[in-house]
Length: 473
Image (cartoon, rainbow, N blue to C red; front, top):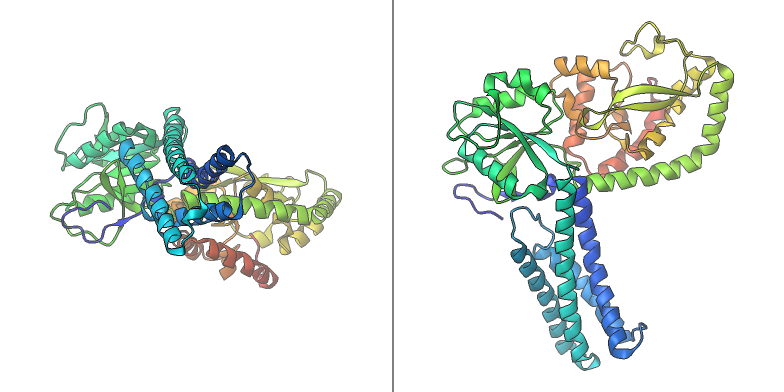
């Protein structure tokens, strides 16, 4: 943890910086460590004894080593963020952690008087070979991440607020760690500016932030202002309240008392996240895997029902089986959400109005599938395609998003996560023609408090809510 004067108990939150690619590599690193330990054990045993079939003492020792490594490696920081750390320090930490594992094993063997059961030459060879492969594995993954980012994949457009010393440090850090994928598109001038940042264009004065934000299209906004610039920081949050952008603060910590916020270290620079989703990095991967596994299982289970419903839609009226409705999903990206068609094909020819679902013309069969929510079953296909999640805020149509983001504070924050088939608001009865502001309040509660258990809880409660409810989206 970075120690900074005047900052008590600064909490690390590096995982909040992990994109899905970095998080995938982190998972691969953990799995790879286990593979390397086991692989080298079998290779050394084969070279020493001429067989891959391990005797019981050696197999037991290998299992104990893996279990011990799973405890020691994370405890000694082998899986913390690579940002700002030199390669030799990382490799040194690898050898330290692996040495601790081997020393503990030797102590256990001495205490249990089992050291004579193992070849000393074999154990030494295993120690050296495993340490070398663990180091090479990390260097390879670091290179792979850098290569991915250097091609522009998974890069983040960053708008800098303030040409200050803190801003200069973050620009220098981003350039030094190009593999981190941060593209500083420019900075906005403020009264607190102290330096000129070379190589970064000035996009205008702070007063132009509101007008120019949509044209600049930043993925993230880094506020490099002193803590005394409270009014200006608040203004940044107000201007971006309807933008699905991550807002981070790069403050000058010296001489200031900080509020209890989560912090991380990016290339040696302390950064406080003011606004971001919990469903990032490993959480994003976990949620995505669970979504796809469940959607495959559900689609296979309900496939006969979906076929019958498709036949019913086709027989009840002319037109396609599926109704494709444009919706706004994660990061403000649009996609076609699928439903079984419950209305005549031309029912929305004169325009679309939000709400009033009960007054919309439906077919006889369509009325039945809307009342029972069976029309939404094709949305598991959207989940399989990665456009939706099973649990999340209900996505809305683009024209309504443009309207609501101007009238409902914080509305765009729901797009920090994928939209869902069901959600926290839905299981509390906030569906259809209900209080939209209240629904957004529940959606934001879900985003702030997300956990896998919360998703499971919502899934389990959804069937009971569907049996009771009278409104459908």
